[in-house]
Amino acid sequence: MEAKQYIPFEATHPGFVLKEELQARGIKQKEFALDIDMQPTMLNELIKEKRAVTAEIALSFEKALGIPADFWMRFQSGYELDCARIKERNIRKTQQIEIWGLIKQYVPVNIFTKLGLLTNSLADNISKIWEVYEVNSIDLLVERVSVHKNKEYYKKSGKLKNDQINIFAWSRLAQWRAKSEVVGDFDIKNKDAIILELKALFYSNTNVVSKTKAIFNKYGIKFLVIEKFKQSPIDGYSFWSNNNPAIVVTMRKKQLDNFAFTVMHELGHVFEHLQPNETEEFLDIEYPNSDIGEKEQEANRLARQFFIDDVVWQRFFSDNPKFNYRTTEKQMIQLASGLKIHPSVVFGRYCFETNQFAVKAGIDRTIN
Image (cartoon, rainbow, N blue to C red; front, side):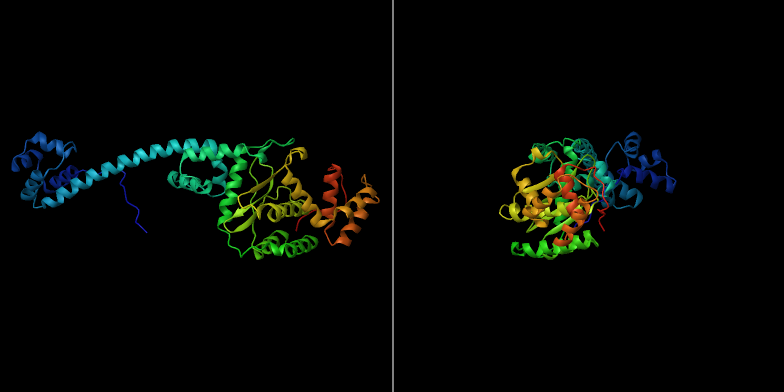
């Protein structure tokens, strides 16, 4: 690895060294000027760093002080190089300040700082942003952010205000972190085994998040939990990372049924949409059902059916069109027990499909 070049804060002129040397020897400037046959004003200019040491002057210093001419010439050369490097550094720093000012308009740097991604080094911070966003200039960054603002999944929720810059930043962070995840090969033939193991895990509701990751990793699927950003109502995200599908969730709603549905929803994308087209990505953001695209609706259907077959659900739903505290909760528990799924999954689906989110029941939705 190439050593980092040291650039001094201030360049040292050979005139400064000469001044120190004369003072140490008790030689006055006028006396020294006479010794080397130089005009006192010229010597004074050199000591005040307004004149350079030439080869002729260096030879005079060598004869008068016994310090080799090569020393003075190297010192002069080093001074000039340092001046050039300091000038270049200052220009670069000015450019970095300008770039950083623009970056702050398109990147939530305060969030990245809190996550520990950014430091006190402006150059390192710019490099980190380029790395996360996979760009190498401010123009490309602006282009990427602008393009993603127009994507379908940025439609605004009827309930929540979305910050498109934060949403895109979260998705970029998810992709960047997923790159460093190492898992085995993915084979879609393991679809049924993955679903069965996840259903059993959700049913037991024990160490759900860590065991979900273990199951996915075993079958070649990357899995991460990244907390959502402000005004970014993201539940999950699925995409292809190198040679593996990846699923990232926020756990925006810390409930077992929400976590289970989100995981299965993204898994539906993996099986049906990512496998045939590795360039696609699916960001699950809360927005009105009427705005959900065809593939999102399909992923929703798959997630529901992974737990409860539509025929079974319709039979249950027709018997319980409205929540009854005396009977509905009991039937939910019975249905869940028969299907070997956690009761909160039944309860969560019922609330969603009846739009009765204020319903309270004794079913525990806590994720363990």
